[in-house]
Amino acid sequence: MTFEELLQQNPALRRLRSLDADTLRRLFGRMLKECTWCGKVVGKYRSTWCSQDCVDQFSRRCCSVKSASFVYDRDHGICRLCGIDVAKQEQEFNAAWRQKEKDLEAVGIRYGKVWTAARDALRSEYCFARGRWYEVDHEIPVSEGGGLCEPEKLRLLCGKCHARETADLQARLAARRAEKTNQTTKPKRKAKRNVDR
Ligand SMILES: [Zn+2]
Ligand SMILES: [Zn+2]
Image (tube, rainbow, N blue to C red; front, side, top):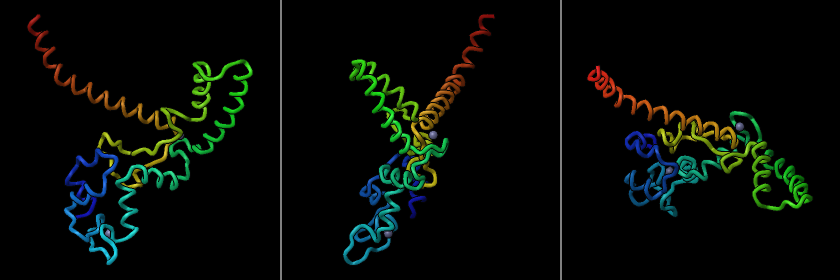
């Protein structure tokens, strides 16, 4: 059985961001000396992986930290939606903030509410949002069954583009919930009105 087939048989796995090797071995039903990823019998001095290639394939699919770093390198740190360089944004912010901090200090502001608000406003100008400079985004959200996906379905987004995409997703989910409630309440309302008349 391939990993793809395993996911088809267990759709609930698609709602996970990561899957550890022991759990994967159990799900695959791997025996001693069988490679966790491909199932082939491993070489003499090996026990759970036949090759580095299988370790890498597993990491990219099943480890959210490793897949994120893979996607960051692959996309060269460029936001797929707006095209900005997220590392450059952070560097430029740091330089701008050093200056701004000096200006604030000159008028006696060091930490506190005003200082924090000034830093957050400046960060936002450099595409920082929701506590991050960037995010590796699932093209199909994990909450909609897009977890443990192939790296092709992951993309690098700057903080702002990711925040916007997340807001869109939340609106979509809310609309779906509202639709469901409407479907169950509509007939009731109709029946009431009939009685009134
Ligand atoms: Zn293998
Ligand atoms: Zn962006």
